[in-house]
Length: 263
Image (tube, rainbow, N blue to C red; front, side):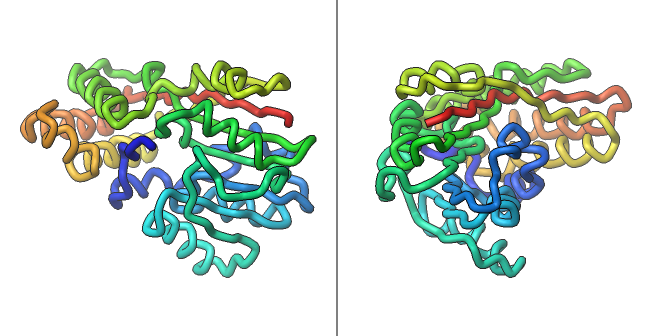
């Protein structure tokens, strides 16, 4: 089991709390039938999970521990959503019976697990025949931005270093098809989509969020504790994120790989 690089600091959740079916699972939307039973692996703060719950019959949300799972439980309670079950799970060895779900979904999960192929095998095992397994992951090596601030090159290098030290694969998007094939899937639709931040409000949100995350999240502590960066280095990167967010020409693209696998 890999270590979750981002952690759940409030600066991280500012990003995760904006996710929805429309901006993070559009490739799966047409399969969200009203009578479907869906497993959401790695639900995080639960915004996609709750969105799913309004479109399908029942959802089961999982996370790696009770603390992480409590985030989606709290969101469901605040929204009065009652058709979600919650379970602490390791995706490498799910506790559910074979053929339990019509849809098995994971968003930004496979990049953080120790064995993504085994994870996909488990997701396939608990999916019903004729069902679908869906996954979407960013690809950090494909991130593109402007202006070309050297401190952001340092940020990307340090993030990828930390993610791999934690047992994950930050450039997961390009590998999803290969991982699915290795897991035994043969009917696979592999696609891509992006997040792109260009407006002043988008830059303020994205750049401001990363300016805080590089100083305050689990990632920051790991980089300093393991000797990969000094606090002054992180402050310099944080200032560059702020400068980028305030630049009229600021532009940032996050590419994602997607797989939709028929069982």
